Image (cartoon, rainbow, N blue to C red; front, side, top):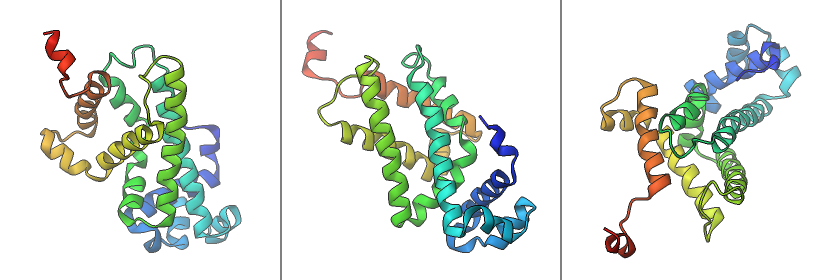
Length: 201
C-alpha cells in the first residue's frame, strides 16, 4: 500500500529508478534518464540521494520494506493455512517490484548478496515469531528454513516466464494463484510419505 511519501519528488525519483534499473540494469541506467522519467532535474536526483549508488540503496531499502510489509500480515492471518489464494494476494502486493528484484538476482554481485541476506534475516525473524505463536512447526535449523523459503520464492521471480509456461498460465495473477496453491500444500502438509503415515492408512 502506497504511503503519503509516494506523492513526493523523492518517491517519484525512486519509482523511476526502480523501473529504469529493472529495464536497463544498474550500470546501464543513467541518472539523467531516471531524472527525465521522474520529471525532475538530474541535480534534484543527486540532491535527494547523493549519487546513483545512493539511489540504488534507497531502492533496495524500499523493496525490502514493501515486500516484508506484505509478508508479515500474511503470517498473522487466521486463515493462513487454509486459503490458497492468500499467497497470491501476498505476491500481488508487490508485483511492481518483481522486475527490479529479477534484474538484481540475474546481475549478481555484492549488493545483490546483501539484498538477499536482508530478505533471509527478516524472514528468519518473522518465522521465529510465527513459531512462537504456534503458526508453524518448530525446526532444528531456523536459518536453513528461512534461506530455503526465501530462495524458493526468489527462484520463482527469476524463472517466472518458465513457471507460467509450465503451469499453462498467461495471466500473472493466475500464475501466482497456481503457485500459491502448490506452495501452501507443501508448507502445510509436506510432500514425502513417512513410515508413520503408511501405518495410519
